[in-house]
Image 1 (cartoon, rainbow, N blue to C red):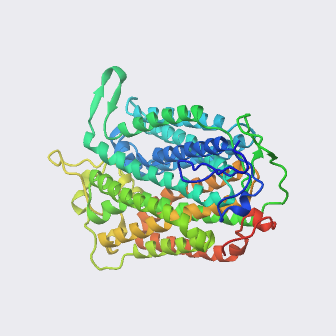
Image 2 (image 1 turned 30 degrees about the vertical axis):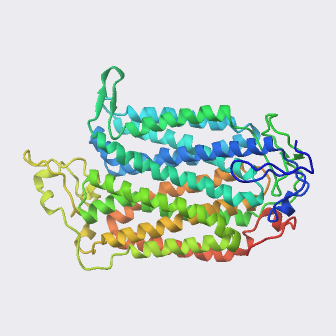
Length: 536
């Protein structure tokens, strides 16, 4: 341990370890009486960086196939319709919603390495299963459903990641660490579509390894790459990750998760005071709304652009992959900026601004012009729709099992299908509107995401956060379940005007809720007078 009077050695990331006396004016009050060696500090931040990687891989697991699920599903099982597509997209979130509280509870009482390794191994196995869903001769769609549900179940470790980072950082470190975590998640969302876009160059047929019954194509190669990254993550968890826990002022805790690797000095039960459950519930609701509107945004991208701009399936996957990648880069920049901005304005004000930006983004998406989208008139013929019941004629165009086009017809149907009645009277959304909305939502969503997580962890305080983080993750997963359902029902049957108007209404309600609980969204230590609030 460093001597009390010696100057601390700067670490690679530019920070200084907390020693017997503070040297940084900003953290002076919180650093006082805190003892942390350089070795402990480095180990703590190495472990946090492993959590960043785990968060990155979790988001890659979701985004790496989101644009190609529908065309791949059509390829391997023509019997699958839009309703089943909704279940496949939602299955990831259902799995995560079930697993998050379980992994969170597990991490409260056992070393976090256990749920982290098990959950990552489940994701690796599920990605391998996804690569083989084409092999069975029947019921392929159910194998895909199972694979995506298991990937989501493995992604339940997000609750463990967030709770560990919340418990291993002081209050002054928390916003920066949570922003970095969300930035890694955003990078995963960036690179997922980028991987998918790059792998489209392989084509739908790709290369077949008969001795392994494996097809390497634009649909399977990304998930196999994700499985490889998962194996690397498991190795790093065993090699580098260690248990660490500090309170809001940076003092080390003796946590029940401790595996004897740290030099903890305080017992985790020394903090007294109850958690403000009104604030906890309100933040869960706000987080649900934030994830819901973003789930609608990313789910609606493919069908909206195919309807409005007559893009083919391959074009929709390729162009939306590029657009979402650019938005992801924008989000990473936003995460870096809010770390500095929050020190001046506070997390609550930034969350309020983020919700306003999201509201404007969806308001722009409302159809304003007079020009109608191109209609698929020529594809709707009596002999082109196989045995469809009258009630099913109102289903979305992607729910038609498989249009039997004439033998000499090889072109893919494009445009807004007449089976969606709103296509006949709803103005098209211009590409400039769509791009502008993408930019604004790409700005507002990351702000709301990181600020809600940061406020949540601060409201909970130094007590074990595994279960609470599990419920927050579960609320976000529930939003991702309802997002695709909202798209398949409201957008398909009523059109973009109704869909985006309702989204605007939901965001307005969330802004009112934020106003009601604004003064309660303060840190645990501030609430009980142990620290002073720096920003309003």
